[in-house]
Image (cartoon, rainbow, N blue to C red; front, side, top):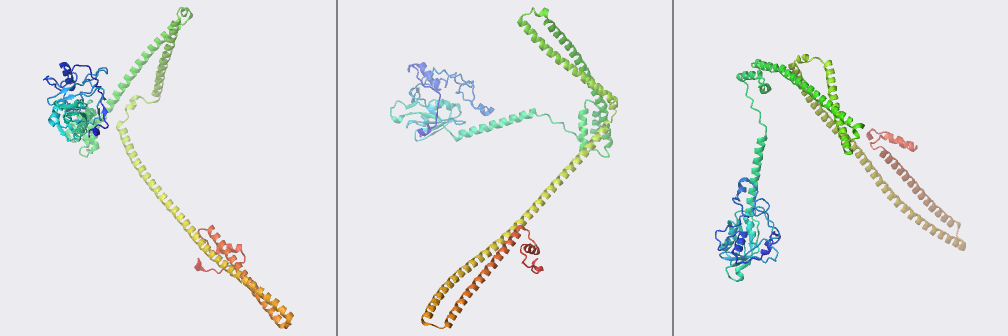
Length: 592
């Protein structure tokens, strides 16, 4: 169990090199106990850790109230503890005496004890290698010096789990890893054991850590919401409902220049709400008239601002002209300095500086002169525009209300045209979709017809091929029969020839009558004629089958060229052109 708990553990950064120090020295005991955070025997009232390690007034539960990430006071570099001692001075582990046991440090030549990766929110440690006779009271006596213990779960196999109240207490308990624990002064194996302290992964610790994270996330969301509410612009004031009293107050506000912007907003909201009716039309007309009276004031303000802008432009132009004259004077000084009378008396470095300054001044003068010429050209263009346009007094006579009415009418007309355009677009899209569907259906129909005609022609050709194969088989059988008959006739001829020779010999020897010879000749002639007739019939049947095959081939080729079909008269005319011996059949209307 201890070996399984020690798997995958990382090493801690503590160099346990022992210093040469007397064990009986009380100062050394106090230093060792302070480094460990325990009260040594004989030194009552000693604090748990030294002032250099403990943070005065540190509240471990501060993270629960403020959402701050838990801080480990034992970790250096966070501003709470001084930096770690230099590597030359190693941390010393001394013998620790308790009431019921004694802890001896491990051999400094051995490697430091290893630990696993620390789980988030770890408050529980695994303690292995306990003596067999160790009790919960002894374990609590040893480890309560590290902090408040909330639970101890001891096993029968010489290990236990200790849960502390805070996370930083776990680091103090890890310090005891590697110590050999001996109960009292006994030398029995059951009363001693080497401690192995490591981080433990507990569900309770992880649950509390998740709760803290969720609480921190809620606090962060609340803080962001408060920040957004603070930075959000103020909402506009609510607009009151229309009444005659409110209308009278609004008419007074419309006459006041300072409250005009607020009052015109309320008037616009009332009109858009539809508060104008036959009863309140006169009130609204008077308020609209009051709003129109501010047009002249606004135009006067614009004219004053334009006048101020013109004066500012004039002042800027005058100042720019003065700056340009000063630049001219500076450039003249540099040019005079570069002449032969004064140039020879300057040193080489002074000449270089004067040349650089002169070039820089000339560049600035040219830029200022170009800017001044641009301003003059703009003024000339504005003067020519003013000559072509009407006077400002005529512009002020334009009826602003008529322009506003025209703008509103144009807006309405634009909206109606836009709606019509949207409707036309929808119709065009529908027509396009219908057209595409029709085109697809026509294509599908034509393709289906072509496929159907091709299938019909294929079926016809297959039937023709089957008939031709049957005829071929018949011809083969007839040919075999003809061969058999031929062989039979040849055999008969041989037999007859032998008989004829035998009869001739008998005639010559015995002297038979002339009638027997005639009968034999007649029989032979009849057999030969019968064979000739059979050969002619076979030849005529062969010729007839070849003509039928030619006719079938011509018809199949014609139908393949015309997949959509043709009239029977057209077919016979085509066949008569190929063979004039064919006779046109009588037309039967039932065949069409």
